[in-house]
Amino acid sequence: MTSSVHALERLKRPQTTSDRPERAEVEAAFRTIIQWTGDDPERDGLIETPARMARAFEEFFIGYSQNPTEILQKTFEEIEGYDEMIALRGIRFESHCEHHMAPIIGQAWVAYVPSGRVVGISKLARVVEAYAKRLQIQEKMTAQIANTINDVLRPQGVGVIIKASHHCMSTRGVRKTDSDLVTSRMLGCFRDNPLTRQEFLSMAV
Ligand SMILES: [Zn+2]
Image 1 (tube, rainbow, N blue to C red):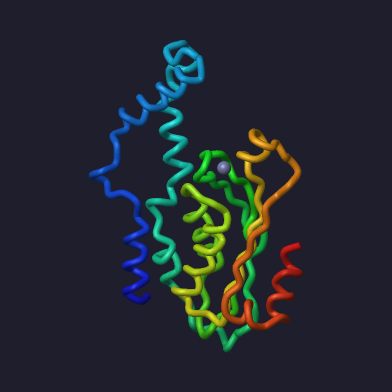
Image 2: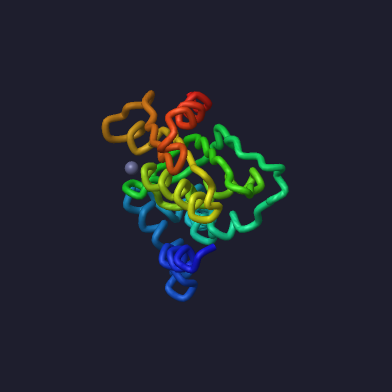
């Protein structure tokens, strides 16, 4: 890993533990939101809800405590010269849009052509997870996954495709329930070689 990657990761860390609000403050904020909807946060069914929401939010946004660069550190070099595409297909993820904090539910296809070393396949899914469990826009998340794999593994190329439905669009606003958003980022041979690009795209339809 280069020191610039390290520096970048530090910059991306949004909060240190010292400026993180206390749990009680977060629960109070959720009580305010419940009240604002028009309901009574003190009634039986809702009394525990702020605490449950805080726990749920910890899960939704666990990605801020995960470092995708570190996830990809352990690699394997005994691969007998393997230099074909490695693709992990249909990695399901749940994220939240940074504009409405509404769910983004989708799947990611992540592929690379190695250059002398490979990473354990579960690590590709963990990188997707580390970026998904943050406030996101799909375009940025697609680029982050591809860029991180490219920066850390230095492969011949990387391709990432994400298809997702956005609840901020299906349950509010224009209420289009059947559409999904497709984004992709191709680097190295995925960008330069039409055959590699086509091989990857054909896996993801
Ligand atoms: Zn949104």
